[in-house]
Length: 350
Image (cartoon, rainbow, N blue to C red; front, side, top):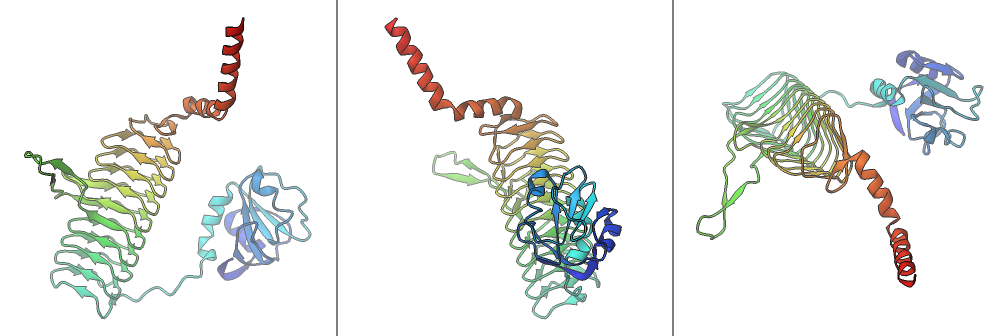
């Protein structure tokens, strides 16, 4: 169970999220958990009929429920349902109750951190142990470099941005305000670019002197790499959320409020529009354009441009409405092959 900072009653929680309460208002909630694991004193959430069927066997005292979802067998004398427009959003709305936050770190530079005299660190920033900040770097007010963070020459970290342990921001990169970059991620490593040597002796490395720009309110998961550009900057737009173990190649331009799930690999110079959703394990070839609002299914292999608003799946990826009948037919391929064989034999015997 994820504990609340302070236990609250179902009535208090309902008031905070604007919920219609069906059940006791005085039930005391100590935390949140998944519906299968919940225990008495905890609250869960139900977003669809699939989870509604689990309510009867759940031990949770209460649940946030998306309006329109039917809950069978609910006893309002014993447990509480809080009906909201969107259970997921309501849960996010009360995240301050869900987390038991540690005390905010005191501003200052920890012993053992190395800050170059030519770096600029706002007095309101917190620089944790074993951090290194090189010459010309700028750290904004309220920024928190937790531990072991490296910030290279002439890079900047915006206000109230948090860099988790062992994040690396190489030279000439800019991280915006209110960003979070999780442990082990590398921003601004060299792009992966080589060309055959003229004499056939091997490969010649292509320099990547450009930088990386991460705009405001971006969150980047653990062990993700965003490479620096050959020309200009690699750019991640405002509000975009990137999962763990994602590779973003040199010169990519990613729009605003995109969601990129784990293990995705995006080759160099890809342009991705605003509000794009990319499932886990997707591979995108270089120099492609993904239009605004496009959706790409998990494990897709994208080798051509995707128009705005379309949903593509498969490898090689294609429009979902065209690919899904193919997948349905593929599952029956053995049966179809046997039918064809029988028809062929019947024709030969006639």
